[in-house]
Length: 223
Image (cartoon, rainbow, N blue to C red; front, side, top):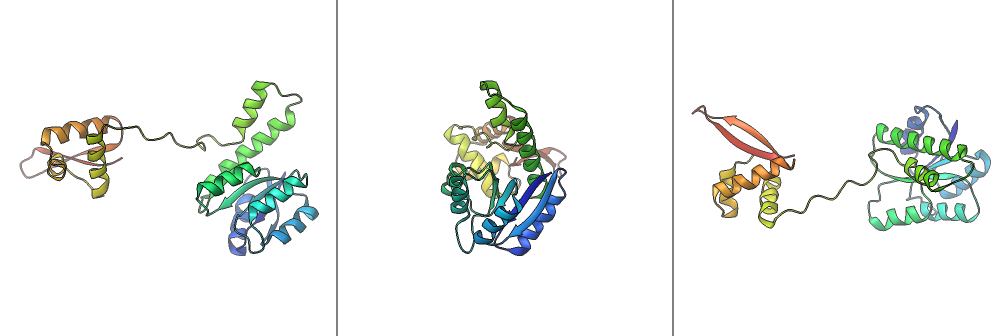
C-alpha cells in the first residue's frame, strides 16, 4: 500500500481528498495535516510515501515545506494540489521536486488517474536495477498519466480565418455565414469558404437548420 498524507489548510477539503485517496486501489490515507508544522510532525511519525500538498498553508508556503523536506533528504514524494494557476507557481513546484501538479477543483477521476500513474512509476522505479537511456525515458514517461501532458498549441490561422473563428466564438451560439459576412465586412462566399475550412479543421461545428422554405440554412458553433 502507498501511504499518503493529505496536507491542506481547509479540514473539509482535506477530508474530501483523504476519502478519495482511500477509494483508489493500492493507496491508504494515513493522515491529514492542516499546517506545515503539523505536516512535518506527521511525516516524521507516519513515514508516508506520498504527500498531497496544498501550496497555501497558514504558517508556511507549501512549496517552501517541500524544498525543506528535499534538503533534509526526505524520500517522500509529492503531488501538489492547489488553486494557484500562475506559471511561476507551477515552475516553482516542478523545480522543488513535485512529481505532478493538480489544479483545484479537480474530479475524483483526475486524481485517480494521476495516482495510478504514480503507482506505475513507483513499480518501475523499484524494479529497475540499472538505468540505461531507455529505462530513464520509461521512468519519466510513467510519472504522468496518458493525456496529462499539455495540449498541443492551437494551429496558426490566416488572419481573416482567425477573425471568422473569433466571431463564431464571440456570439456564443449558432451563427450563419451571412451574419459573419455582415459583421466582418466580407462577402458571404468568403465567409462561407473560411467557415468550411474551420469545420474541416475541427474548430467549428456545422448545423443544418430547416426554415419554412424547406431549404437548410447552415449555422456554425464553436467545437
